[in-house]
Length: 166
Image (cartoon, rainbow, N blue to C red; front, side, top):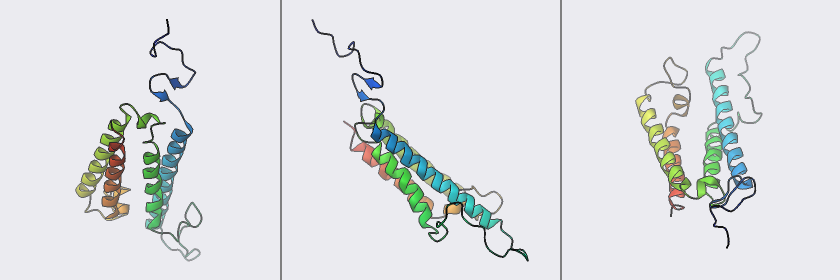
């Protein structure tokens, strides 16, 4: 008599019913998301250094960005950072990752939809604050109208999870 799938022994890191828990694709998606978050945070830190910068007699040059060359990209830094986050989430929607099979697509889809909706609603509540002013939310005020693209981007990633839902 053969063992059922539920009681069969599995190698470490492998769920016998759903596939591998950890894969190279999953690691790649985590690295892309982390790199995107780091890019957004570093660019935001640089912008806040520029907002608080006061020229002195000795030093009249603006603060240099933490990553060389990003100062010339200006608003494209947002596209690069959030694009990496979105790409990482899309890569995580593959069936070889935990978010791509079982209940994962539903969780990813609803999570992305709710994050996008919350991002846009929060932006509209705090939209009247100028970057660098008192009471401004550090990332939302820096992005200004690009917040709408970020919220809609999260919702678009949610649709990639919706196509994986069975």
